[in-house]
Amino acid sequence: MHRNRLFAKLGSFSRWMLVLAVLMAILASALFPQPTRAASPVFVNAAAPDGGDGLTWATAFNHLQDGMDTAVAGEEVWVAAGTYYPTALTDPADPL
Image 1 (cartoon, one colour):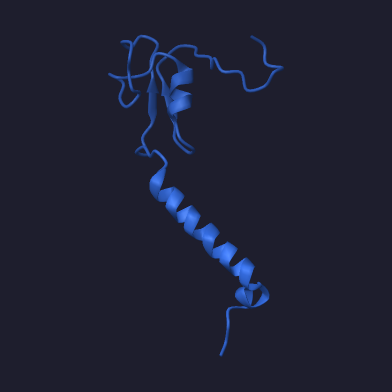
Image 2 (cartoon, one colour):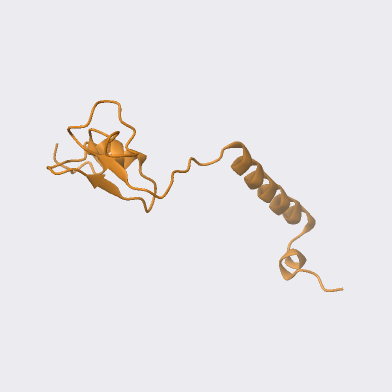
């Protein structure tokens, strides 16, 4: 009978460890799902009312950093006219 080459090279203990790791990854993804957002822009407007969620211009964030913290990889952050600066330092050499 033909056996999977990966399993053929692994010992019994290694096979069980591989199966256990896969099962733990599946369980972790089920118990701790990653938050998801729609692929829409995050809105920032310094003149918007406080407490916005960034989902629309009417509920835009007041601060750029809030929008950047909320956005997920590949998501755009749109800002209203004006000059905005992030407030989180990513490099100790950044000026204050």
